[in-house]
Image (cartoon, rainbow, N blue to C red; front, top):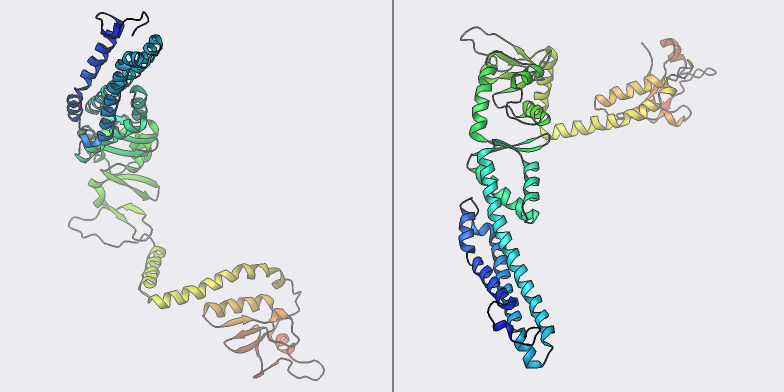
Length: 410
């Protein structure tokens, strides 16, 4: 019942009648959802791609009809339970408004989805170059769809064109760029022909020749020249890095060790050397690397472990340099002792320094079981003399196996 107590919901040309007619008309429009989906499919989206969204729109459709039914039943409920007609009228109006909002939202989402797919397809047809990030942001701002749904539809349509070879994607300095494949190949074919005119190009010369052929940003353009050119490659010459077209690559020779490149105009029918070295150092390095590669695995690991331990001891050796050079000419031979020790270790001998414990008449070093005393005075005679007791003339350095071996300068 209305505010005047009459059953105005049954009377023609009243608000209550119009609201149901309007809601029914909108609901009837939503019955055209299958037709809208067919239009969306023409732009490359399958029902499976948007099945979740379509199910959600149908849920909105049924929910709106339920709310509309509740609004229609409000006057009957007021009569049955003796509830204030005005209160029930307002309650029915709220249900009707909820139904109307639900229907309008579902209709707007379907239309936005249709417009989005049309806009993406049209843009890809008309624009040969697009920055992925800025374009996606623009689409998300222009259409009243969730950002995640917009991005998913966008990625689906782009992936389809990339897989069909209609679109190229480059990851460059300022983001991903999308280029129409046919347009790209036409532009690059002309540029690759220009590359054949000279043997090589410096970075500045290449940049001048290329200009902004692909309509990229300055940062993306520089990155494209550095990494993505497919008509040649960068080579390290002695005067710097230069770009060479694959058309001229047979006129180059490249060091097999360090990669240094130089121009080599070989005589006609001359078979190029498959391994050219720019210096004797590179040749020796390559030979050494080959020898290491061909060594048995167990032998390589064993030697690497021993040499690694030697390198680990170098800081300790360095820290004792002050002691080595501060002996004041007394003949203790600290520097020689360390030097001989390193030499023995490099020769893979079992060498160990003992003299740091300052034991009286003790050995300085132990090499493969042999005790050695190091005496490095100004002359060999003084070194030998320092090994004998000045009072009784006896040799002072006796070990478990007899007199110790004496190291002295030549």
